[in-house]
Length: 198
Image 1: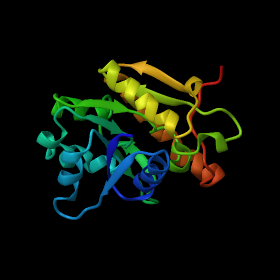
Image 2: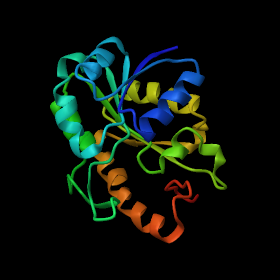
Image 3: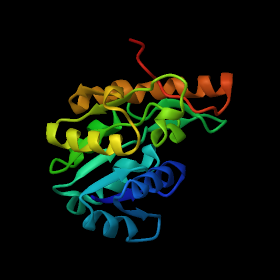
Image 4: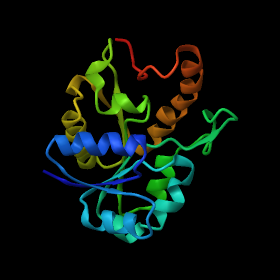
C-alpha cells in the first residue's frame, strides 16, 4: 500500500483515484479548495498531477516544498483548446509540461505517463480490442519502476509498458495529444489509446 495524492478531481483524477483505491492504495484527492493540494501532497509519497495541463506548472511550482523528495506522476497534457473545447495546439511546442515541471521542481522525480489515451483507458486498458501502450518518461530510474508498479495495479500488463528514457522524451508523447481531436471528430468519444504496432 502506498500513500497517493491525486491533484485534480475531474474525470481523469476521479478515474485514477477510484482504481488505485480498489487496488489497495491509500488515496487522497485534492479539489480546488484552498490548501487542499498542499495538504494532500504533504502527506503522500506519490503525487499524481491530474490538473488541467495549461495551469499545472503554476499550481505545482507553488507546492515545491510539499513535493520535495516525492514522485510526481504527470498524466496531463498542456494544450491550447480550440473553439470546440478539444486540443488545438501545445502550450510548450518543442518542449513538454513534464520537462518544465522537472526544471521547476529539481528535488522531485517527475514521471510522465498515461497521457496518450482517453481517460477511461488509464484504469481499464484490457477493455480495448487491441493491446494498448503506456509510456514512461523520466530521469529517475527508481521512480519509473515505482510508477511501473502503479500501472500494473491499474491493469497494465508489463509488456504494454514502454520506458522511453529521460524526461525529454515526454515531448513526443505530449505532442501525440494533437491526434486526439481528429480521432474524436472521426469516431466519437470511444475509448482509445495510441499504440505501437509490433
